[in-house]
Length: 195
Image (cartoon, rainbow, N blue to C red; front, side, top):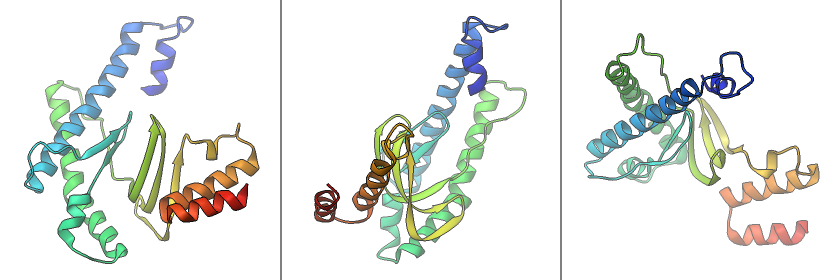
């Protein structure tokens, strides 16, 4: 549908119709906001909090959820054990909330069939968002693939844009890695030496 939106909104397209283009964007907004609401309701209930917003960011097809309070309940454990526990929590509980929420949305909208699906993608301990679709995550797990050392997921940033000179992309990626995994002093030293 996201591809169809662009075509339907193009006045030179054979089936151009702004109403249909808008219906796609509005459906997407409803879908992600519906999920955000249900996820916050579930996590507030699970964590015995009231009115907390656990969704730190959302996008066309994604929610970024802080699990800090879930991790706090686990106590002081090694990172690998925390990642395993979060993976299990997401598979056993969060995924059920997602599935049920989209079933309810399909019923609410009187949909012909439930076609909305979402699953856990990354487990990260840090993230930085600079704008829509511009972020960095310090990941320990990506769709079930566990990393011995955290890996960066970089979206939309200059470090991966082809318009950024290659030598600069390498330095920016290294700088991002230091920002996510080391100290401010390490970053200052890196910038000074790289300059």
